[in-house]
Every structure is written in C-alpha cells, then in structure tokens.
Amino acid sequence: MAYLKQLPCCKAYKVISANERGVADILLCYKGQFVAFETKRPRKDLEPIQAAQFKLINQAGGYAFRIRSKQEAIEAITLIDLERH
Image (cartoon, rainbow, N blue to C red; front, side, top):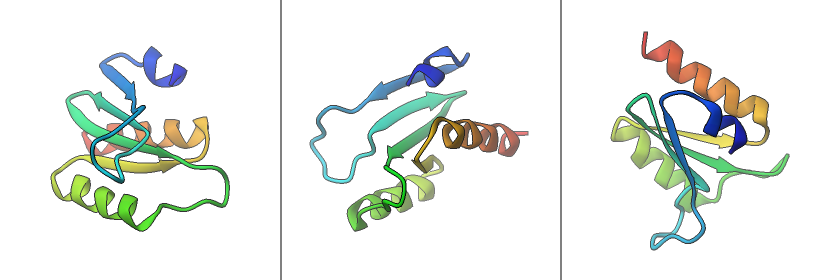
C-alpha cells in the first residue's frame, strides 16, 4: 500500500470487508484504469472464485493481478503503463 499511495495518479483502497465473495484485497484507480490486486503468500494461488472475478475484471477492460511482493506490484504498474502507450 505504501508504494501505491506514493504513485501519482493513483488512489488505492484496502478492502476490509466485501459484500461479494472473491473481491480482491486491494482495489485502485491508476491513471483512470480499474485495477485489482490480490495479495498472496509465496506458493499460494488464487481461489477459484478469485480467478472467476479476475476474468470478469479483465473482460470489462480492467486489470487484475496476484501480487506476492512489492516487486510484483511494481511490475504490474509498469505493465499497465506500457500497455497504455
């Protein structure tokens, strides 16, 4: 979250409780793009409901990433920047 909060053109929220199963841990708007980050420990994968939510987000034109480290968050943001150019 600290990394995301210092980015210009980014507003991030940590999801504490959601009304729908499979909602990602962190939701953000980055340069006008909807982005979802699901944080996982090393060697942990997405639950099937989370994978289904990721598919819906991607189909709607947003971005969804499984994040295991700050470096992976940086790589995800870099990917968004590259795709937008």
